[in-house]
Length: 137
Image 1: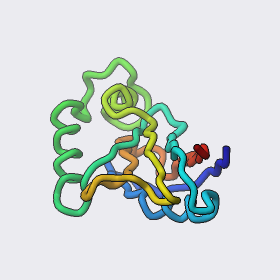
Image 2 (image 1 turned 30 degrees about the horizontal axis):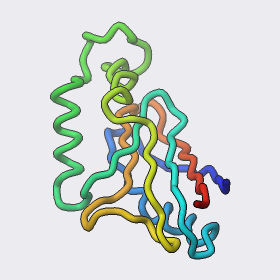
Image 3 (image 1 turned 90 degrees about the vertical axis):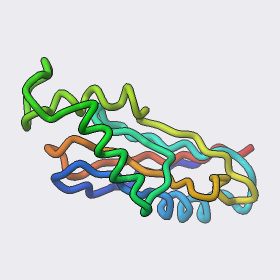
Image 4 (image 1 turned 120 degrees about the vertical axis):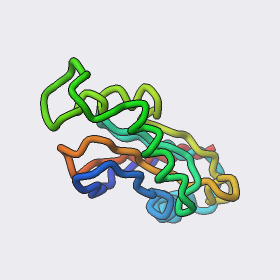
């Protein structure tokens, strides 16, 4: 297995951050055009990985839905950090902190409109790490 850790700057607001180009670049380095699986994992208790269409409003729709489901208010028992921080710890139960994508002939086998994105509602930590791992098949 080949693996690397990348750093992602998410800023201080809710974000859906596109990781697709970084995943593609990693695969160019490690696959030699072969088949296998790409595993994308965010080692944080407050972020997730989503396969979603980006750039056509879906990312904004996802953030709006998460704001409706998980409001940034004082209802959360996990209450340290910024207001509503507890919601960030609940989000990974809805958007898992990992995804596994098939790789065929060195290329991501995503659907036409799918992208790989990190979803982060934790405004207290503006820098994240994401682990990319390729398992040859």
